[in-house]
Image (cartoon, rainbow, N blue to C red; front, top):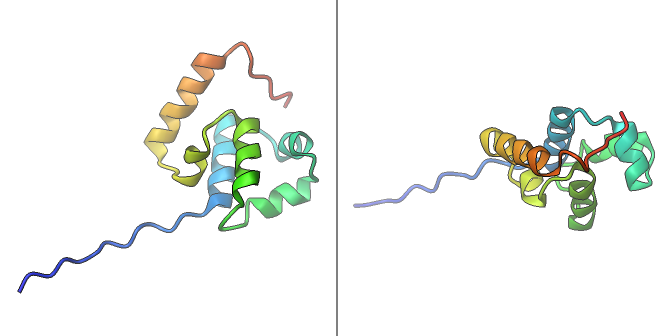
Length: 98
């Protein structure tokens, strides 16, 4: 008898991914809060949420200059490549004022 075992997909935690990406980029919560028109405490709460709404993810991706998929499907190696390419392509236009 052949049985196919489904491997459970790893649980995605949008908030934790946002925090990790933000930290990798050296962006402070205060900057994100200012850009998103939120308080720093609201950004902190976002980073604790397992699922963040798509419209908020879209805004965050624009602030971090990353694709939404980088937040939704965080993979260390792929994310590093995305960040490196984003900075290389947009080196003159990125200013985080940190």
